[in-house]
Length: 245
Image (cartoon, rainbow, N blue to C red; front, side, top):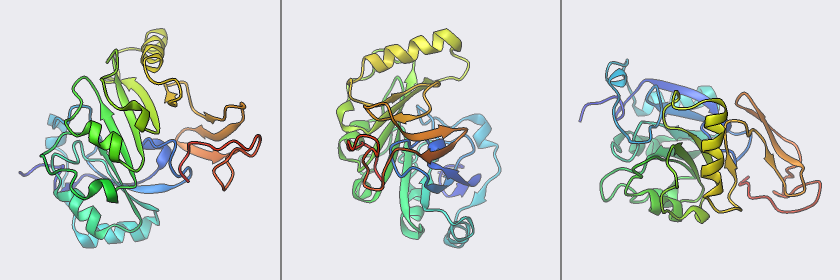
């Protein structure tokens, strides 16, 4: 199938992990985000604007040159549905430098996860009103999984939430809610998830230790390790964190 999500890329952009979002995985790392202009979506649908986007063939030479020039720690597949159109992800698996991370809503053919669960270092899983058929398998078997939970989706779908590292809640459509209404949506979604699961809304920027110390400080897509030690423990109280270094 000829589309901008499979074999052609409209963006190759070095990004901090905080913008992907990966808030509990390798703070301070930068990945080369490769894929569609608007990134991953909750339903995997190909938007009309993407169909008209500029297409640039993604081949081994371009991929290698971009990684070497950007000096990133790995690559991030952010096509609107990475598993549904897997050809470009296969190129990243073969020609990447460093770690591989993948964004997906979990839709795809039956064999979409073959070999990927062992190879992908981090997943950004988009969960909306209709979770993909591979969502639960990714949550259970992925090395590191962070979920972007689309609102309103109350209560959250019956999925293995205890297996994921963090959840980021946001409106599925940016104009769906603002201010107090959006905050109420976020609070309701987080309250329905396991209490020990880190849950971030639009006003939550930092990762805190149980003692109150700021493990990772974030602002405008940048991060700084504050009380997160090189051993993964809080330097203030010594407690282990849930952050993957």
